[in-house]
Every structure is written in structure tokens, then in C-alpha cells.
Amino acid sequence: MTLLPIHFISGGIMVDKTEVTIADVARYILDQFGQMTTMKLQKLCYYTQAWHLASFQRPLFRADFAAWDNGPVARELYDLHRGKYSVTAQEVPGRDVLSSNTKEFIDSIVGSYIKFSGDELSSITHMEDPWKGAMEDSQKSGFANALISKSSMQKFYASLDGSNSQSIEM
Image 1 (cartoon, one colour):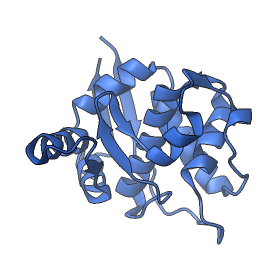
Image 2 (tube, helix red, strand yellow):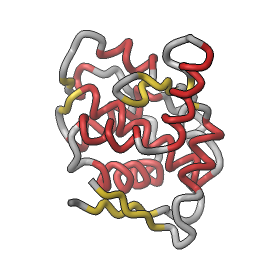
Image 3 (cartoon, helix red, strand yellow):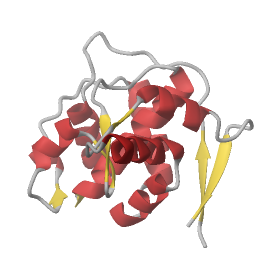
Image 4 (cartoon, one colour):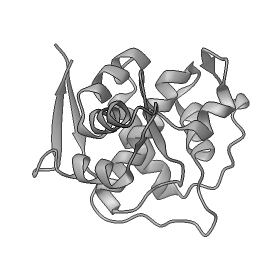
């Protein structure tokens, strides 16, 4: 059994005037942490978005995540790595537009999750309300891949622990 500490970062971050995209975040993650499976990259981008919403009440990037069978997937990022099992930084056309505060935030979040495989991260998301709620919506409506609302992400991750720390058992 492994315990994963997750810590909120207090305070705000400066957002550059240039809009940050999910490709920018994915490229940065790959630059910092190296080649990884596309499933793992998707989940790491999801968690950077989720914790950014919880910490700062605004999204890090505009892309939405949908509840796929293997966890949250952003179609915009999926289209960049479709058909690949793993991906390198050179394969993702991100720009170096992230502020130092944003990079520090991403490093903190990814650092908490990097030790898990894509399959393990998928399992973790399956235990969390945003993915479960969107999957229920998909089943009720009969349409696959319902969007995971940013508001459900913000509410869930902000509520995990009043002391700004949460442990996840695996």
C-alpha cells in the first residue's frame, strides 16, 4: 500500500499574457520528466488542471477532459499523440510560454504523481467524483465520453482536505 501526499500550493500565480494550452503544459512535463506513456501524460495534464482549478479557481488551460474508459482524456492532446503508446517532448508542439511560477506549480503537482504508471493513475481517477460523475452522465444519456466539468474538478479537489493535504491509497 502506497500513500501519495498531495499538497495545495497557496497564493496566486502570474499568468502570462500568452494563453497557455494543454500542449504547452504537456511539452513542459515531457521536457522535465522525460518520455512516458500517453495515458500517463493525459492523467498528469488532468491533475495539473484539477489542482490549478482547486488552488486558484481558474483553469490553467482551456482544453476540456472527457470521461473515457481509461480515465480523463483531453481530445486536443489525444489528437497530438493518437496511435502512439509513448511520447517524447519532441513529438508535442508546445511553446515555452509558462511563467516560472506556473512551472513551479506544475513541478509540484507532477512530482506528486510521477511515480505512478498510467494504469495506476487511471485507477486513481476512477475513484474520484469528477470522472465517476461524468461516466454516470454518459451512461444515463447513452452518449460516450461525457465532459468532466471544470466546476466538478474544482469542487472535488478543493474539498479533499481542509488542511491542504490528502493521501491516496494504492
